[in-house]
Image 1 (cartoon, rainbow, N blue to C red):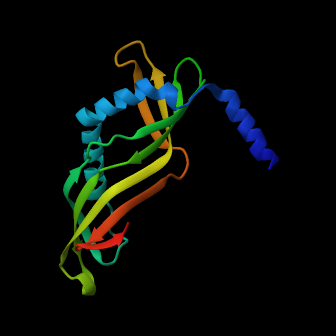
Image 2: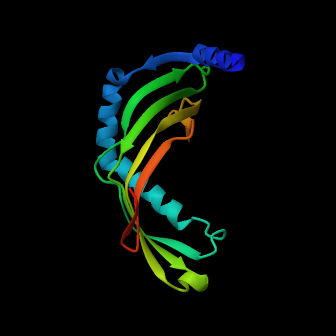
Length: 175
């Protein structure tokens, strides 16, 4: 327990600022606009790539997955709070608490193998993907030439809460 208290104190010393939802109004405004223009498309491309590149070799009854359609919808993630860290003059780092009650819709064809599924193509539908968690963004190194940084690293700080509705061959599996 003492180690946890020490870790919390050390983390608090790193904070340069803590911002609640009222302080995120301008950033949320930007996210709302960017989601409809470009961020939604980035989400769609990322999901499509993740599904199409999914390694099915460890799943005995699945030969491959293929994305049929991905639609991000119009509901952007909601920023709840942010913490900015002082990591020195050559980098930026911040955590953002995010809640996303998405309209994301993913349609996948699952191609079977083996005795049970044989060569069947089974439609899988993912809807209403929900996410609540903390994203860490590190921008480093900061540079003198556009765009002003070398890399943008985004990671999930802790295990997020994720939920979704799944239908397989038209039958609802989860909600």
